[in-house]
Length: 464
Image (cartoon, rainbow, N blue to C red):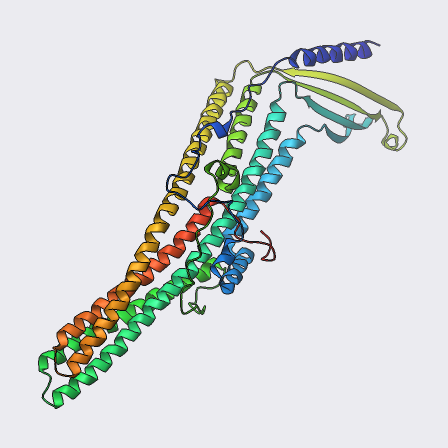
C-alpha cells in the first residue's frame, strides 16, 4: 500500500508540473526572410517572365545532356553528398528515439555460501522501462534540430546536383573551346607552310629575299609551339571533364568541333523568388532553424530532468524458478536530476549555442547577398559579352579579307611579305579572342541559370 501511495503522489506531482510548464512560451524562431530585404527588380535588367526549368536543353546539344546524366550517376562528390543526407537522417532518428521509452531485460544470478557447503542460489528476470518526461522541451528541440539538419542535407544534395550539372556544362564547353584553339593553331601552321612554299618559289625566281624566308620561318616556329601548347590545354580540359563524369582521366573523350549557339535571353523572375528557389539558400535557412533548436536544447539542459522508471520481474531461490517463478515484483519510480555544480559547462553550452545561432543568421544573410550578386553579375556580363562577340566576328571577317588581299599582292610582287605575316598574326589573335568570348558567354549563361536556381532537367530528361 505504501508503494502504491508513493507512486500516485509522484505521478500527481509530475502532472502538476507539466500543467504549470505548459504555460511557459518558447522564444519564436527568427524570421530569416526578413534578414535581407530583396529588391523589387534586378538592377542589371532582365528578361521578364518566370524562371524556366530544363535549361540544358536550351543549348541544343544532346551530347551535353548525356554527359550530365552520366555525371549524376557516377560522380563521387555527388555520392558523398547523398551519403551526408543518409547520415543526417540517421542523426534525426537518433534524436527522435529519446522520445520513446527505453525497454530492457535484465537476467541475474547470485550464489552465496562458504568453502564447506553451498548455501543459496538466487536468480531473477526483470523487464525495465525508462522514460524521460520532456517537460522543458529539451528532447523536442533536439528532434527539431535533427529535422532541420535533414532539410539542410537534402538541400545541399540538390545544390550539389545543380552545381555538378553546371560544372559538366562548363567543362564540356571549355573542352570544345580548347579543341577550337588547337584546330586554329593547326590551321595557322598549315597557312604558314603554304606561305613558306610561296616564299621559296618567289626566292627561286629572284622575287623574294632572305629576309622574307627568315620572317616566315620565325612565325612557323612560334606557331608550332602554339600547336603543342593548345594540344596540352585540350587534353587537360578533357581530363577535367572526365573526372566530373567519374571516368579515368585518359583524355580520350571526343568533343564537338564547335561551340553551340548562344541561346536567347533567359527569364530571370523576381529577386524575392530566389530565396525559395535556390537550394543553397534553403540549406542555409535550415541551418538557422537547426541552430535555434540547439540553442533551445542548451537552455533546457540547465533545468531539472524528470524521468520515470518502472520494472516488473521474477525472483526465486532456485534455478528452475526461471521457468516456474515463485515470486514476482514491480515498482514505479520518479527521478529528478538538477545540475548544481558543473564548473559552468552548461552555461557555456548556452553561450556557444547562441553564438552559433547568430553565426548561422549572419551566414544566411551573407549567402543571400552573394546570391543576388551572382545574378546581377551574370545579367550584366551577358549583355556585354554579346556585344563583344558581335564586334569580334566583324573584326575577324575584315581581318580575313585583309590577309587574303595582302597575300595576293605579295604573290603579285606588289607588296612585301611582312604586311601579310602581320595581318596573319592579327587574324589569329582575333579568332582566338572570339573563341574565348563565345566560351565566356556560354559559361556565363550556365552561371546565370545556376544563380537563378532553375532546374537543369525538364520532363523526359531524367530524374531531377
